[in-house]
Image (cartoon, rainbow over all chains, first blue to last red):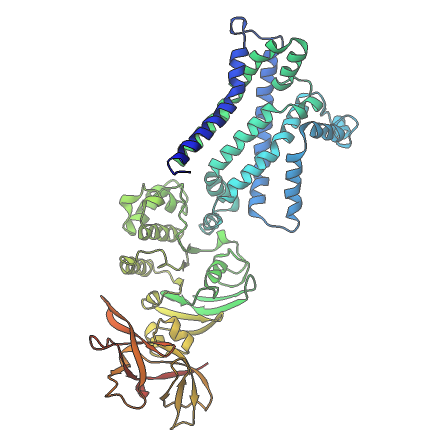
Amino acid sequence: MSDALRPRLTTLAAALALLLLAAPFVGLALATDWRHFGFAQGDGGAVAVSLGLSLLALGLIVALGTPLAWWLARHRVRGQWLVDALLLLALLTPPLAMGLLLATVYGPYGPAGQLLERAGLLLTNSAPAFVMAQFYAALPYYVLAARAAFEGVPRELEQIALTLGHSPARCFFRVSLPLARLGLAAAVALAWVRALGEFGVVLIVAYYPQGIPVKLWTNLQDLGLPAVYPLLWVFFLVALPLPLALGLAVRRRLA
Amino acid sequence: MRVDYRIERPVMLSASFEVGGFTVLLGTSGEGKTLLLRAIAGLLPARGEPFDGLPPQRRAVGYLPQGHALFPHLNAWQNVAFALRGPRRRDEAVAWLERVGLATLAERRPAQLSGGQQQRVALARALARKPQLLLLDEPTSALDPATRDDVLAELIAEVHAAGIPALAVSHDPALAAVADRLVLMHDRRIVQVGAPAEVHARPASGAVARLLGLRNVQRGRIVGAPGTQRLLWPEAGASLPVDTALVDGTEVDWHIAPEAVEWHDAATATADAVAASVELRQVGAHGHGAGLRCGQARLWAALPPEGAMHGRVRLPTSSIRCWPV
């Protein structure tokens, strides 16, 4: 193959990949009945549930996942492969199975569920259950991406910050965090997309309150395909801005 | 200031010596020089004085690692201000930059500065910490050869002006030449300490001579009793008359200064002269010389006459210095 042909082939392959990616959404645009565009009952509530509770789940994921990711990036301990295996397990478990596992542990008959219920925290078909489902679905993705981001920060810079008289916590906030920010932004975007779009785990442990993914399912069951499309458009509108803005910011920084 | 440290991991190392003015710890790569600096800075588990048992943030050291380790997300004044507290941090940082001649570049990011400028920002940052001891890791390694001497001169002038003892570790003999005090490390032990002139005049061993960058440090063996001794030079397949107090059979490192090596035509050479051929001629701003091939050995000497390629070299007995190995 001549050298002149190679770039053209690459371009063609890239164009084909883009075309394949775009196909379902072109299909959506064509299938949507724009003249009778309207929402089913409860769609508004589903948007509010998805947006509000996903933000809460994202906050929890960042708050707990960031220290874990930093610890994993900076410490080597005996048996660390167990932690790696645990993260991979959480990642590998099919969403439906993860939902069942959560129900087993946190459900009304589960050991943790009974204890928490006595403390007034019901983790089945409740807002906390919804947040928990999203937390479990997105946390491993966030931790793995954030760990890679922290691993990219030269350790020497953190150590120099210590020698300049700063406490480890201050070094973390003034050196590690700013230097890992691009990778962390990508991790946040990934976690957001995973949490918001989660269906399998949520379906099992938090059928109610209904977020967008479950509402799409019930719309399909009760009203048919035309009732799915408008809510799907709103889903895109709600889900896209955060990862898109973060991605653009990262690429602008890298440029 | 006395430095006395013992490191157990990742390698065993103990070092005890006095740091005064601009002190250079000279040793080859792999001796553990960087480990020693990191131990003093508290970045490596070790016991010793000063600062024993203190966490790194409570040790009053200014540490300049190789490559300077400036924070890439901060500009020059923010890097310096990192070591400062209080509302006047910016003014103080700019004053420190002014002191190292970089106030005009205060807004630049590290990536926009040359190697020498980065080093001065790192020095300003380390000094702003108000340390009791400055630690410099290979301060000449990241410098452009053309400007290295000037940058080095400025660095040392700043260290002297600050009045803080500084310990620089290096394998660079050029840095050793400008030290106030030299500490030489070989096989993870301190083998000689002194002023550069003293150490250069009397290297304690062949290893020290090599560290100091002396050319023509060779391996050999003494044969015969004092008075009729000869030095076997196996690499060249030659033996040379020497005069030492060493006993027969002693393995030695020996040295002869290149300028003491005498070039002779084959016709005028004495019996003790060694066959040599010219391998390369070196003509530079800092002196001339030639690399000669004597058997398997390389011998550095003054430039032979133009056009001479093969001849013999005489190594005067009085110019040969031997150290038992």
